[in-house]
Length: 327
Image 1 (cartoon, rainbow, N blue to C red):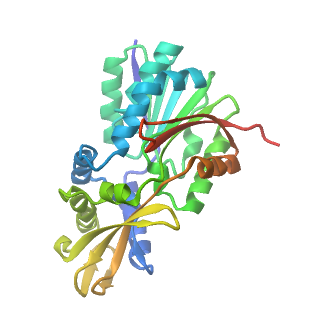
Image 2: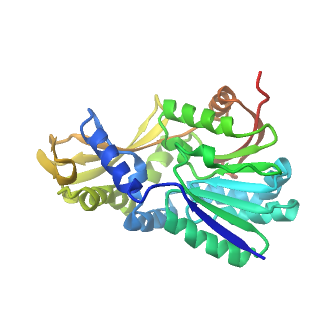
């Protein structure tokens, strides 16, 4: 008999308060910035789905290619009975892992952790309909701060962090996240990480600045999120989308550049924000990795490599990690 449970570990006003805190910190800093998690309201999520189908945007296709071709190898290498996913969203790509782990062994439970209760509920009901003997457990929580909520199990756990979300962390925050995750795992558990790879700047910039302008609309939509959530009066038409490759940091940056001098009122924060003409608001970093540098970061956090897979063009990676025995 199938089971679906949903546990909520965030207060009802979590999203509103987090948006207020992030906006206050980012809009009063120099240079100004916002974290990319605020892209994904309903409109933003729909625009991102459109982005994943664009010819320039390779990461989603590349990761799916790896999972389609290598999920069986990954399942065999980890030999886990529980699959846990951080930032699971709709859990669409996860089905490839679920199928492989069920074919390989005895997958009994899928645990999905995400801040969106609606996404977890929709995904959970869909999964239990398609996998009637799989226990599905949704956790409404923030993986940056609530990794201690990952439940203990009697068998091995595979924690999956798919997509290229790891690239959205600043280096210090990424280090803290990886160490916090390691602290929650036993040496029997495994960690599966999706990470985009360093490649031609022309390919990278095009993926974040498509000719159809969908990414520009996606970027500008964050201003509508601020307008609706914080009673602000940003004019999206007074900003232009910018995507640049930082060769020193080896990451893509997305910005919104003010086309004129302007003052923006944010009523919910009792804040007026001034933008000079040409001033930029950074809305995302997306770090790209090399196998050697990623291995060094994971090793420093207490992991050792257990598998490495890329798509046929070596654009994207999935890597498997085993928690190292503490010294």
